[in-house]
Image (cartoon, rainbow, N blue to C red; front, side):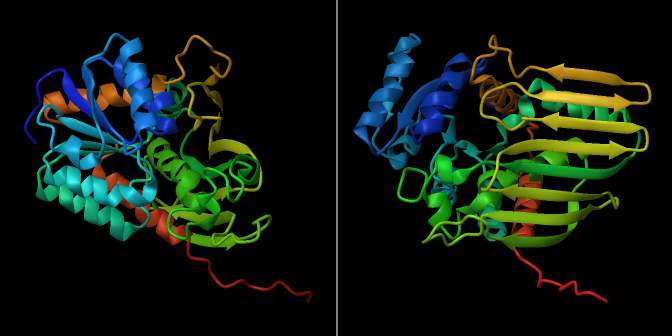
Length: 350
């Protein structure tokens, strides 16, 4: 890739909830980045995005009524794609053909095949492609990475990940967001929230998961649901580290725990859309608690601002950026493997 001039000129494709609540405010505040254009098929959402920009003193942001029109805008260097997951593949490939650098919301695609095609399109057109794993930019998440890599709890011998929420309360069938129950390719807990555990375990542990023993089942799925509401698995990494992986629509929990020969590290609430999390590290020589959950001085879009600054700086420098397309492809392979249930093994009395 050729380095871009500063500030990187950004366009936003899709002005739904995540864009107007988090990423447009983040872009307007990000150093090294400048929002210059937005696109949405709905006039009301375009108007709301322009209003946000104007309130930040940016009345010069251009509005387009389609992604195609924004991609044809020669004043745009990079695009942020905030469309529904099922539309990511087409938008990413179109942006690659247009020669725009791309930041796409997670999950990048609905399958390994889809993700691989997007990664290949970016490579073929020499276009930078990054996936929006915003949680990785939080202070507490990054501290967890440093502690594990520095051996604060000794060699890790077991990992337990659990990330879930009550989807019937948040997104009942027929309501906005109810596609999580009815989209056989983009719905279900694995793509919606399991992706956070996938990259969280990989990044903090510094290892790829290479073997899984999955179980997918239903506990509270409503009538008409075509996806399983719970996905569980045992796993093992390339280095042999074992662990468990649980993501479900049936309860609310967010913990990622690492156990080592010299102690433990527990990360709580690290995948929220707002910054703030809790970390407790109890090691032989390190005893540390970080709790920023109640820190209301952090802007609600802070992790997204850091994400834009990271990618914009990489674009200006000619790379690198994280997560890499290769890591995102590995995450997609993992989710595909987790979605395949093994046959149940009955346990009967002797």
